[in-house]
Length: 231
Image 1 (cartoon, rainbow, N blue to C red):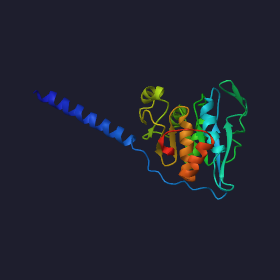
Image 2: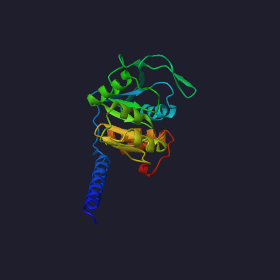
Image 3: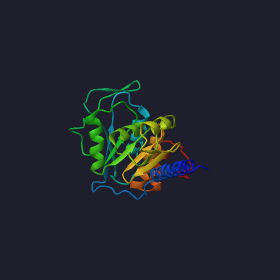
Image 4: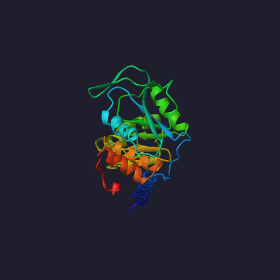
């Protein structure tokens, strides 16, 4: 075989290996550990909202956190936050944000679902909370907001299955994983799949803060009959 052709084949093989290596690295999820409750016993959970938010991305996880079957006075305190307090639409429901980015209580957890917001104040809020070590959760295409903020580069992530191929082209530095309820992208970042996957992730976070039994009790209180992890 001609030397130049051999060298070209070798170069192609090396390139393929390099791409495979990058994909494998991005596909490695972060190791998990139990999460520590703050001294107050109450985790503040900020739900970032903007216009055309997908309602279940907010309501699903919020219901889990609001109805957690935790002992004593421990639990979660949820609220909504946006760039302004102007009403926003989530389907046919109108939401008036509880706070703005400027005056919101300091959260322990930040949840970002599918929505249209991507202004600099919006993305800077995500960047700032990540830099300060807050627990960051995306639901559905909220992962794209994390990607726009630059906090998923080089990490594995998931989103609604209909958007994975498009996101892989738009955000090639991220290792997109298909058909996952959630992915532990980094020690303090989780990305969930579409819609009801946000409930799955919130129950998992409940388990990490408390224990398996409390997560199961919460799911059963909600009449949520999920997959085999509850058994």
